[in-house]
Length: 267
Length: 274
Ligand SMILES: Nc1ncnc2c1ncn2[C@@H]1O[C@H](COP(=O)(O)OP(=O)(O)OP(=O)(O)O)[C@@H](O)[C@H]1O
Ligand SMILES: [Mg+2]
Image (cartoon, rainbow over all chains, first blue to last red; front, side, top):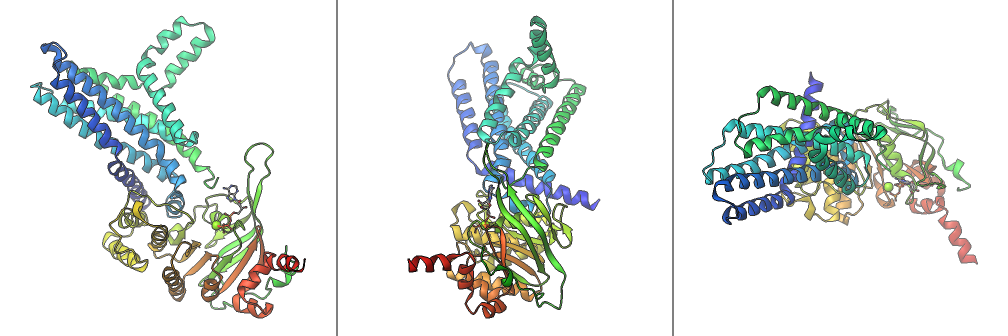
C-alpha cells in the first residue's frame, strides 16, 4: 500500500515537470495565437453565404485546434526522454528512488495532462466564438468533444513516447509520428476497402495493418458532431472509445518500458 | 604501467577500526564500451578494479582525464551493468534496485531543467524522496544557503553560470540527507571560495559519520579532506592508501606521486636529458 502511494507520488512529481515545461515554453502560446488570429480573421471577413458562415467558422476553428493539439502533443512528447539524456538529468533522477517505469509513466502522464490543459484553453476560445455568433452547443457536447479528442491524444502520446526510445533523433521521431498520425486520420478507415481491390500479398498486408493500427479517425468523428450540431454520441460508444484508447496506451507504454528498462544510458 | 605499482598498493588494511563495514565494494570490475561501427575496437574504461570504501570515510578517487572514474561511478549507480566483475553498495549488488533513498549523487556536466528555478528543482527532487512539505522547505532553505544560491533561488536555471549550475547540483545531492555521497568532481567550475565551501561541506559530512566517495583533479583539496585515496590510470588501480602514508612512503607530495604514476616524471626527465 505504501509502495503504491510512493510510486504515485513519484509519477506525479515527474509529470509536474512536463506540465511546467509546457507553460514556460513558447510553442503553446504561438499555436494558440495563430489559431485565434486565423479564426478571428475568418469571422471578420465575410467569405461565405451568411447562413453557412457559422458552420464554416466552426469547421475551420476545430480543424486548427486538432492540428495544434497534435503538434503540441507530438513535439512535447518527442523531446522528453531524449532531453533527459542530452542534458544528463536522467542521471541525478535515476540515482534517486525512481524506477525507469515510473519515469516512463510520469512522462506520459505529464504530456497527457499538459495536452488536456491546452485543449481546455482552445475549447474555451471555441466556445466564445460560438457564443459570439449566437450559436448554441450544449455542455455535454463540449464535454464529449474534449474528452474524445483527449483520448485520441493519449494514443498519440503513447506512440510518440515509444518512438522516442526507438529512434535516436527526436526530430525524426516527431516527423515519422506526425506522418503516421495524419495518414491514419485520412486513410485509416479506407485501408480494408483498398485491401480488397489489391492483389494477394499486398491485400493481406493492408488488412493486417488495418487491424493493427489505432483507429484515430474514429475519434475524429466527434468533430463533425460539433460542426453540424448533431446529437450527443451515445455514452456507451464514448466508454468503448475510452477503453480502446486505454488499451493502446497500455500497449505503447509497455513497449516503451521494455526498451527503456534495458537501455544503457551512458552510450 | 608504473614499475613500482605493486609496492605502492598499500597492503595494510586501512585504519578505520571503529567501523569496517564496506559501504562500497568493487570486485574485479571491468567496464567496456562497445566500439561504434564495424571494425571499431571496444574501449576498456576500467580494468580489474578492486576497491572498498568503508563507512564514515572520505575517499578520494583520482586519475587523469579518461582514467575511468566516471565510468566506475556510473556502474555503482546502476546506469550501466558491469561488463565483468561485481560491485555492491550497502551490501546490495548494484544490478539490483539499490537503496537509493540513502544515496546522494552529483553527476558531472549536468544541465538541470533550465525552465525551472533552483527552488522548484529541489522541491521536485525532495518530493521524489517523499520528504514532508514543511520539512522539505526547511531543507531547501538550508541547502540553498549552504551552496550560496539564496539570491538566485527564484531565477530560472537557464540564467545560471557554470559554477551556479554546479552548486545547484551539489544542493540536490544533499537534499535527502544521504548516508553515502558519490560526487563526480564536485569542485569543477567553482571559484576559490566555492571550493573552500565544498571542502567544508565534505568535512562536515565526515564529522556526521557519512561516507563520501569523490573524484577530483584538485590534489591540494584531496590532500586536506581525504582519509584514503586511490589513483587509477587507464582503468587500472595504481595506488591505494592513506594520504599521509603515501607521502611518507614516497618522500614526495601527492602531486609528485600522481605525476609519477601517470608516467609524466620519467618522460619529462628523458626529454630534459635528450
Ligand atoms: N559513452 C562512452 N562511450 C565510449 N567510450 C566511453 C564512454 N564514456 C567514457 N568512455 C571512455 O572510457 C574511458 C574512461 O572515461 P571516464 O569518463 O570514466 O573517465 P574519467 O576518469 O571520468 O575522466 P575525466 O577526468 O575526464 O572526467 C575513456 O577512455 C573514455 O573515452
Ligand atoms: Mg569523469
